[in-house]
Length: 204
Image (cartoon, rainbow, N blue to C red; front, side):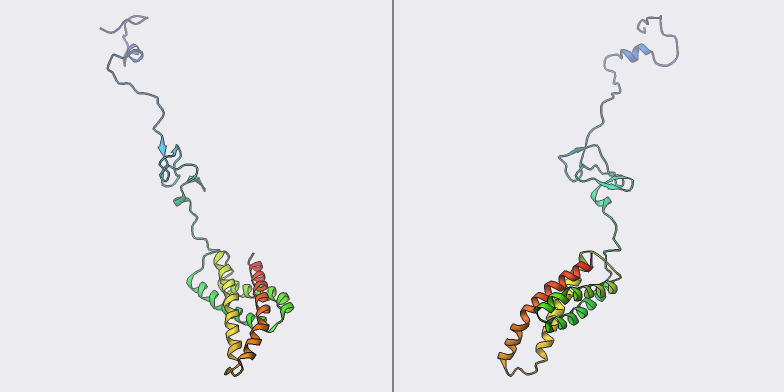
């Protein structure tokens, strides 16, 4: 027999509202408890309620990155290959060749100048080496370009020094060579610093 209803026995269709309010003992009812918390896939000890908008993995605030349509994990939020800073093998080979070639020419000039001329001409030469390397690589930017320019300046100066020493022919007078090296050593260091400064400034 159904429980008494305050307005009389239940005669309608569907479940008895009195049973919904006072379910019989042992009956399972739905709850409105909060959903189970999630834990970051990279930091299992961090509780989170955020998921990646692309792969749906749970992520904490430290791992979340702002994507085009919401938060994403670091794997999904990593930007694609940047065409401005990425070098193809052909561009890299061209950049190395031009940087060394221009650096060697600049090094030959730097070895011929004195202290003050190296200080004044170095930034200009370094800027020209950077400009030539930029043109060879399609005006790329980034750390790879800085390494190319610095490598061209340093490597070119070394090649220029080898060329200059070889131009002496058979070394008959070691003292003359030593005197020459001692004279140009200081100006070469000044040129190297000044050219590097000018080259990196041109890349900004």
